[in-house]
Image (cartoon, rainbow, N blue to C red; front, side, top):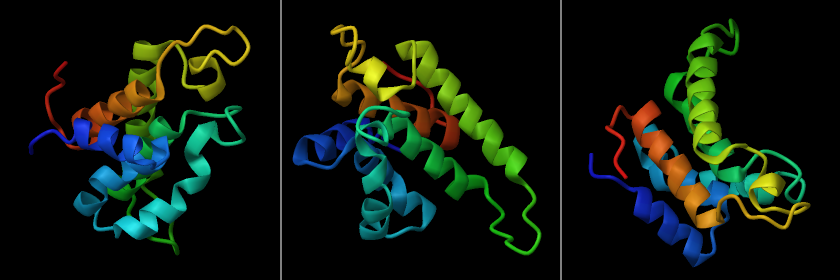
Length: 140
């Protein structure tokens, strides 16, 4: 698959929030309609709670992990371990690159020191989707 990292960045520049940009870039690969993903990820932007929570871009990557590996068996919800392992790999990769997964810290809300721009957070999360979920090789 050709990388879609820059497509995610372009959606963000177009006005999608960071979560929408990441999730909508790959939703077709997981069998979900873009408008549905756009709507369901709207509340994840700006770090859930206006920069108080986890970065929306990495949250969207974790949402895609569930779409990739969940068995979807609501009567016997088993198989979560696979999704949790993918999510851990995504969160760990993001944290290793950016020191944190918390939006407010990334944006320097208290310190006035920006660790990573929103565009770069989108790119980082998209790259993790491609490497962790889609099995691509990481490129810079």
